[in-house]
Image (cartoon, rainbow, N blue to C red; front, side, top):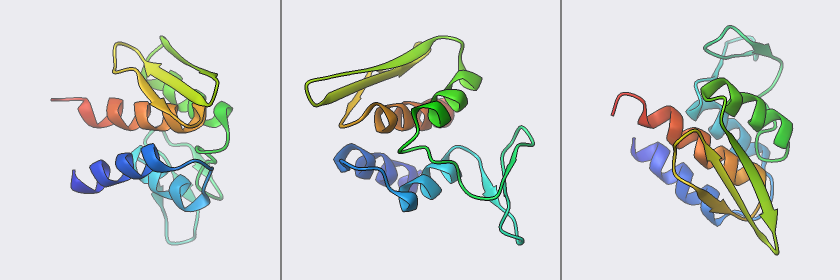
Length: 112
């Protein structure tokens, strides 16, 4: 759980998309990289690389929609917000990053 907490803290501080963070976010959301380099998620989805979660609102919103039919993201004047279901309202520099944080919290709060 310390790794997840550290990732969330770094996401709150980041201002730009990052492929390195995409990889960490994907792992935190349940994706695994197989020996052949193909990424597999818990629903059986396969991808040749980790999804572009920190730069693609479509990618992270699609994942978030699998967690709850309710939620969304908004942005205005340099701050973005995101929420998934009844989860915490998250504010970050971009809607993608806010949605990443909200998704990680939703995944890791299940069973609490």
